[in-house]
Amino acid sequence: MPHVRTADGVSLYYEVHGEGEDTLLLLAGQANTHHWWDSVRADFDAHFRTVTFDYRGTGRSGKPDTDSYSTRGFAEDVRVILDEIGCARTHVYGTSMGGRVAQWLAAAHPDRVGRLVLGCTSPGAPHGVERSAEVRRSLAQRDAAAARRALLELMYSPAWLETHPGPHRTLGDPEMPPYARRRHLAASAGHDSWDVLPEITAPTLVVHGTDDVFNPAANAPLLAGRIPGARLELIPGARHAYFEEYREVAGPLVLDFLTAK
Image 1 (cartoon, rainbow, N blue to C red):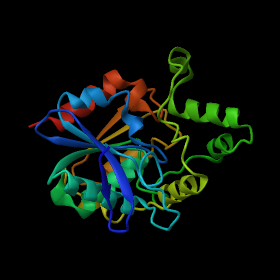
Image 2: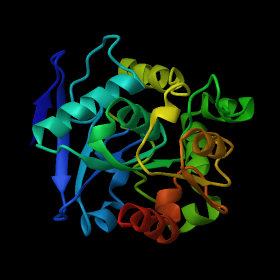
Image 3: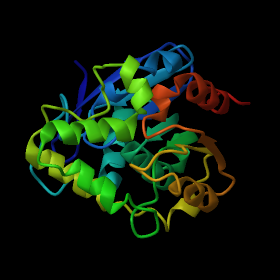
Image 4: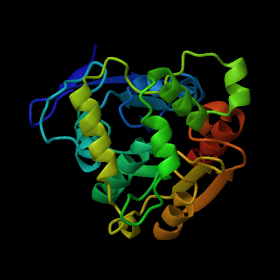
């Protein structure tokens, strides 16, 4: 099982698949592992050498109970993995919190990023659009089953859930320690990349589902308007996990962008 150790001593688990000449880094959402990409990764493995990893605090990576969790810090963790596998330059596809991490990576290390895809993500609370109080209440219910159902319906449409009973890999790492879950939440909530977004030089595609209220779709045009030359694509009817439920739309859309000459 491949691991690499960071400067502060945290062991990071990563996986490399695919046979393509170019590399594609896939970044998962908050409190999730590389399994976030399980249902769609094969679409990209056919074209790229794909790289995924478990954030610190999740999966097979180390889980320090320290102040080392931030979206900017996760981007530096990614850089350590890229160095370990000898990847000087990679395309990056980040969704949800992974899109926040991807923003920092592209801004801080422009020489390391080829093309950039930001899915269902945000520039951060100070300038972005936060989820509503109603959504927050639905996720904070004391009834764990009701809260889980609320999260499922934020990720996927009820119609899709009727024919796709799971397992659903986008609901968070079930074995994640509570302290690490809290630190991930704080890291994502503390994200603010607004000032550095204009510094991103990578060709950028911003993708969002129109019916996403978990990370409101209004964030997509904010990002696209802030990043020079960014292209915006909205997927009608899609919720937060657009890349899975709308795989037949989102997959080709992203692949066409990443493989464009």
